[in-house]
Amino acid sequence: MIIRLATSSGFCFGVRRAIQMALDASKGRDIVYSIGELIHNPQFVGELEEQGIKVANDVTALQDSVVIIRSHGITRDELRILQANGNTIIDATCPYVSRTHELIQTAIQDGYEVFILGDAKHPEVIGMMSYGNLQTIVIAPGEIPTSLKGKRICLISQTTQQVENLKKLACDILDQVLELKVYNSICLATTQRQNASAALAKDSDLMIVIGGRKSSNTKMLASLCSQYCQTLHIETEDELTADSVLGKARIGLSAGASTPEDRIIKVYNKILKINGEEDLATSVHNIPLFKEESC
Ligand code: SF4
Image (cartoon, rainbow, N blue to C red; front, side, top):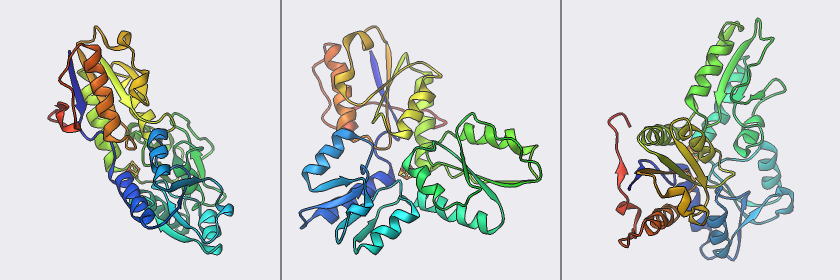
């Protein structure tokens, strides 16, 4: 059995930055609040709680508190409410996400109708929408808007979408519109992770994608890998059974942008144990990486 890890797996720059900012803010304070879970990983969120970083879902309930805005960002109204209620705000919105807010506002000033490719229920997209206007809409992957004759459209993407979905949407509407401006706002970390995972999936009998079930980029990775081989999306090693891995000669591992390294190590070691091996990994650097020329 060969087990290999896709390059660029685990925490991305934006998530690392948000966690570090939260940990720094929690030093010397009993409690700080993050607006929503700091990352989409329930196990890790539990560990942060033990360090005084608590999840708050209702911004109106916070007054004179220390508040961290997670990497997904928040809505304009939520920001106004937090500011009005005397909170100290630590803004850990990922710069890639902040950029989408700026691009949306500029596109509207320039007279474009803004279409956001993404998941309308995802907090990042909800935040993006708040920088739009009444004409701003969210388009789910695979959806094709109609009645666009004579319109000037600006297309922008949730940062964790697949670039193929953005290309397809642009091509699908191009011949309907008067003018089309497209921003590839998919972040570099997402693109690198998707390319590396797809390359590994093409060379594997089974892909195991590790990450929260609510994590958009992890779900996207699992969907991408499943185009090339059998794929399991798991949150922890407890979900792995002997039946799921035995008999597979080449197993690929990949992890979402909000998956801590110790989760990856635990999954790797569980597979080794199922396979009767005793030389377990103590660091993610002990796990062989899959490297492909094009990655
Ligand atoms: S996935 Fe990309 S946009 Fe999202 S937090 Fe990470 S680096 Fe930022």
